[in-house]
Length: 374
Length: 240
Image (tube, rainbow over all chains, first blue to last red; front, side):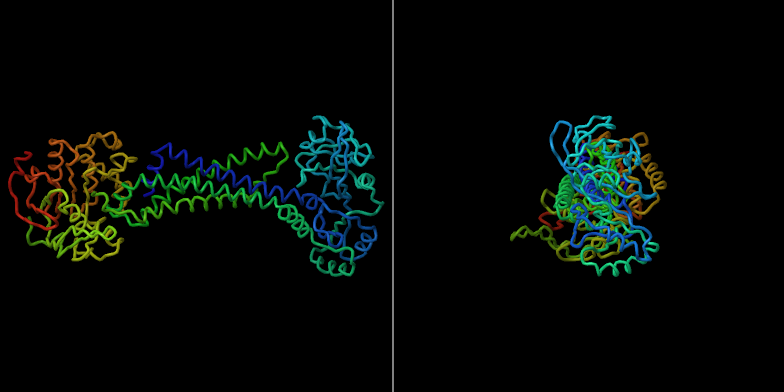
């Protein structure tokens, strides 16, 4: 049955091309939308991940990283006093006004972190180095934000204003984007405090490193006595921030809706093509039935065809998605094609093809062998 | 003929009624007959007489509305589709008026795939199919698609396919209907050659010229067998 099914599919090149195009476009859409969704999730929490720490001290009631409030140095001191705590590192993070070289105003996000050997901030540096940012009022910019910041392609040494203070570009990163696409300006924690008016020792967040990760619950219980601050695990804080932006903003819903719509359109295209191919092959199917093929063997005719379409069309779709990923990366959009995304995309392609084959299978099961004699 | 052998097909009081909405049309009335191995039988009748319906029922493609049909010892009148399919696969070879070859497969694979369907290893199936097509005079056309063959060649491929797996009964529905006279006679000759003491052939036709190939003729009118007679004339002079 496999040979008959596949030869029949390859025999009509026009219909084969249409079906493959349908599967490829639908799976491309699925891969890109799911990848974008994951990309947005990751971009919303990427600073948390890279700053590290087992626990994060955050102001009580805070739902998202970006709505930062200042925590006093006493929080840091209290945390450092617990025997389970190995280190406490401050993060200054928040929105600032910038004035671009042509005088227009915009917003950006300043990030200043206390350094730690295995958590270099900023990561993905392509020009300059993190030590350069320790000099007064030095910042990094991301290459994808150069146009937005009205900087040329060699921005090192260029200046612009942040909260009415003139900063100089000392380093360039590649591909660090925020969920809101607001430019990230990384700097030293001293510079960040100065730019945002945060008192020495104070910070927006404290990342807590533990001697033993198993101590987390104990430290959290201990800090629960403090009403204005609470401790959350880094993973929970990342999830909360991701949920706020991707889920709460509706962006995730839009992306999911578009992905599902793409799959439905793909299923309709593939389904129609497959159905019309099956209808055209009814005489052969009736002949096979007359010659003694069972209904399930006849179903194999459709299933082999749809499997080929899913594998080849899905493969083409994946290749297109990889091309689109590199194209979109230049605009700062992160399409994450990690194993989880790929698995979900492949599952979506298989599901789409399975749904698309239902009408054809129904037709196959109803085919009458006696029609070959009419 | 082998009159004492067990019948290939045994039909008793077969009736067939087709329903279309409230309209019921009885196509076959109380048909009883036997087909025996070693017998080349023609089923003849005018258009609309019920001969194709009877052929469908006798070969297990349709169920009768009432009555009983045994095909190679299996009661197929009430059997499940899968059972009928297995009986057809094992015991029946079909030759159709419009060939019904698989257009995407070459002549060799058209025959071989039926053998694969019957559970034969693909390599063996292809070797066997090749030798069958050779015997049909198509040794030079093995790799040709049906669209690249003449009508007579296509029907010979169809006969080779019908013979694949060595069926007990070969059934033909107007196998010469789409062919010119000479090609038709040649195809009928090829079918006649397939008759063995263990195998029967049943051909539906309305062409009286084909009687020369038959051992037995069944005539059907308005869904009833009106004549059933032996015919011994002319096979040899038909094509020797």
